[in-house]
Amino acid sequence: MTQTHITEVKTNTEHEQVLRLEDPASGLRAYLAIHSTALGPALGGIRIRTYRSDEEALSDALRLSRAMTYKTALAELRAGGGKTVILEHAGQSRAAAFEALGDAIESLGGRYFSGPDVGVTGADLAAARRRTRFVADETSPELGNIAEHTAIGIWHGMRACIEFAGLRRARVAIQGVGEVGRRLALILKNEGAELAIADVDFARASHVAEECGARVSAPDEVLFADCDVVAPCALGGVINSKTIPRLGARIVCGSANNVLGDVADANELHRRGILYAPDYLVNAGGVIRGSDFYLLGLRDSAASVSRIYDRTKRVLGLARERNCSPLRIADSQAEERWRGAQRTAVS
Ligand code: NAI
Image (cartoon, rainbow, N blue to C red; front, side):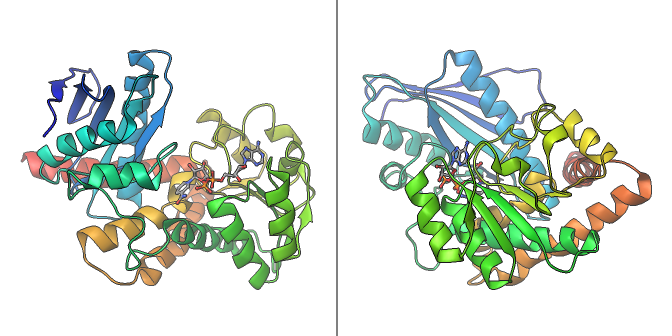
């Protein structure tokens, strides 16, 4: 057992619990934020990166854990939202730091269930799992590949958008053909879509293009390709006030988290008649699988992931009816669900 100092951080946000973790022996410095457990255990991955300051790391943990509550609520899971961010620095003993984090997660007794996020490797997770039951094992064959579930979920959301837009067959441009983007490209190929793909890793792009019979685009041009759907599957923030005027597609539907530069960009897309499938609505396939497997013990998640199709249709329909952005509808549905559960728990 490590000697991790765990301190409660007081914030003026709506988070249930925010912890600062510090273990001098391993060099672990981290923030673990539980935004809400009103609907069930808080789900959310571990991110590790170099932060400029503690404040920056804390604000990332607060923002990301809140986003997880919205994602799990909208996906109708019996789960809430949380997140851990580790400040990466020289002098940190990586395996020992993840073990110390594992102790801290275990001490929460299952209120928080974690898994991978940006920067985290299989070896990191294995180190954390040596000390806790509450970190996902991505190597478990019963769990299956999380990115595969995410890609399938994106496809369900995308076909809802395509049908909603009255298209029969779609030309799709994918930015980023990594874990999710490549799998999405393979699904789209089987569905007969015409594909353009791009990746900053050119070798990867050409390999996937060959697998899928896709055209390769330049990474900085793919968003503006002449197509029906653009699927950002790499970085966040790429749909913004600079890129929106140049978009060639009528639908934006991809896996990238926080794909909008700003929430106001959803209004601009709406004003221009471009259908935007909210990122956290359509990229929930992976977390749905995690929740099904770890919280409900389900062997198969095909049916639950496919519900992203109906949810997307509902969100787009209400947005049209109320003449507002689909993001506004998604946010209000998610808020209604988790705040409703919070009120029930309090009364
Ligand atoms: P990944 O790291 O496997 O793939 C990202 C790919 O994008 C890489 O091949 C990279 O070379 C490429 N890339 C980076 N910058 C680029 C650029 N400017 N232009 C073109 N390509 C670029 O990541 P993964 O797991 O496929 O995730 C993709 C996105 O989906 C991320 O934003 C992630 O947060 C999000 N996401 C992933 C989930 C999952 O299950 N893996 C679940 C939900 C969201």
